Length: 197
Image (cartoon, rainbow, N blue to C red):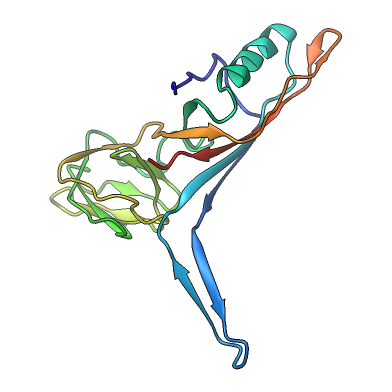
């Protein structure tokens, strides 16, 4: 298994990223009540469409799709519409220790008054995490961040926080192919699922 690099100029026309939750629901056949159990093994799913392009540019996309070898290889993807936080947090923040299943993390060295806004993406210890609610660092640069997706693994104290294009490894689910026309190539749609190690 290899990690395939995105080709130069990889810029989707359409992009969708959604959280796929792992849960089980149980319904009572008599009283109508139901219970839902969250199994905490969330993963990201990405669907994108590359735009129509010249045959030369389409060749790069075709090579990328073929190099993925179906689900064999992986590529590192990020939220392509929010490459950096909308909030003001920058620099080199670190994360405090957090246990598996935690719904929040505490960041240090975020900068006094720095912010993360709902929907911002951060990366910690190989996990691609989405901020659930606006957060502001206190006078010591410490910020508690609630998360949309719970932690799949524990995080060691002092782990670096990535805010600029935080990535996670993804496998390609679809078998998209480039359709060539005289002088250009149609766009190709691709589907990916986050790798759970």
